[in-house]
Length: 428
Image 1 (spheres, rainbow, N blue to C red):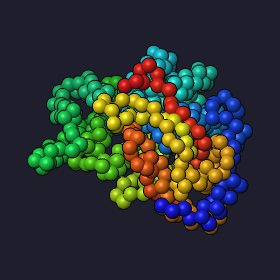
Image 2: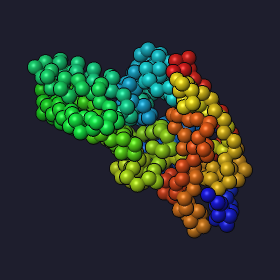
Image 3: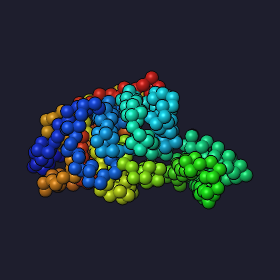
Image 4: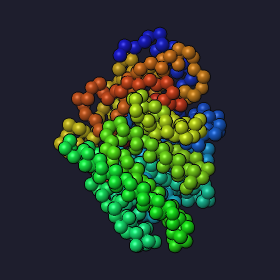
C-alpha cells in the first residue's frame, strides 16, 4: 500500500517525542530506562503480554528476560506463562521451584524447538537462582498455556482416575483413548462420520470431567487438593485439545479455539492456582494482540482483555532488519534455518517506527496520542507476522495487513536483530 505522508510524518514526530531509548536488551543492567512503565503497571495491571514478530529472534528473547526481571524484582510478579503446552511445562516448574533435574533437561522436555534456545535457558536459570533466595510466596512459578500437546495430560488423567476410582477406567478410555486419532482436516468423504465421532469424544470428555468434579471431596481426601486439581485441569486440557481439532475446526476457527483456551488457562492459573498473582505471558504478537483483524477470529489477547480489562497490558515487538530462525518450508524436512530480512519497506508499521532513528526503544501507546497519530493507527497497515514456518519466496516478507489502533499498549522496537541460538536439543 502507499504511505500516507502527512500522517506518517505526524506519527514519526510523536514517536520521536515519546520514545524511551533502551539502555540494554539484556537482563542485569538495572531498570532506570524501564521506569516509564512504573505508573502503568502500578495502576492495577495483573497480566503483561510480551509478544514477538518471529518465534526465533535472539534480542527479543533477551529483552523478554529483562522484562521478566523488572516485573518480578520491581513489581512483584510471581507467575511466568509461555506459549507452550500446559502439560509439558511442569518439568520446568519443578526445576525453578525445587531444583529437580537440570534447566536444559527441563527446557528440552517441553518439546517446542522455538523455546529450546540459549536465551530461554538463561532466563530459566535466572528464575531458579532468584527462587533460591526468596520465601515461598515470592517464588516465580513457570507454566505453559498452550493445548497443542496432550501426551502428558492423558497419562496424568489416566493414572489419577485409575488410582482413585479404578472402576471408572472405561470413562477414561472412552474419553482420552481416541484423542491420538483426532485429525484437524478429515478427508472429504469422511467429514460427517468424523464430525459425529469427534462430537461423541467431546461428550465423553465432558462426562469424565463431570465425574471427577462430582467426586471432588472424596478424591481430594484420597490424594490431596493439589493432586486433585492437577488431574482435573489436565482433563480440561484434553477437552480443549479435542474442541480445537474436533468440530472439525480448521484455519481461523481452530486459531480462535486455541487462543480462547490459552486465555482461560492463564485465568485459571492466576485466579485458582495462584489467586491474586500477577503474570508475565510470553507469546507471539499474533496471540497477545487484542484483535487479529480478521473477522471470526478472536485472539488470546482479546480474551484476556475481556477477562481482565485494563489489568491486561500487552507489548508488541517490532524489528527493522536482521536475522531470526524458523522452519524452512522449502526444505524437504522443514529444517530449522536462519533467515535474514532487509530493512522494512516504506509504508509498513516497521518502516514508520524505524524513522525515529534509535536502535532500540520502547513507546507507551496507552498515553494520550495526537489525533493524526490515532488516524494513522486506524488505517490498514502492513506489519510483519512470522511464525514457526517461513520461506524466502513468501512475498512480501510475510507482512499481514492490520490496523495498529487498539492492538497493543506498547511497542518495543529493535533496529537490527539476529537469530536465536538453539541448544543442542533445539535442533529438531
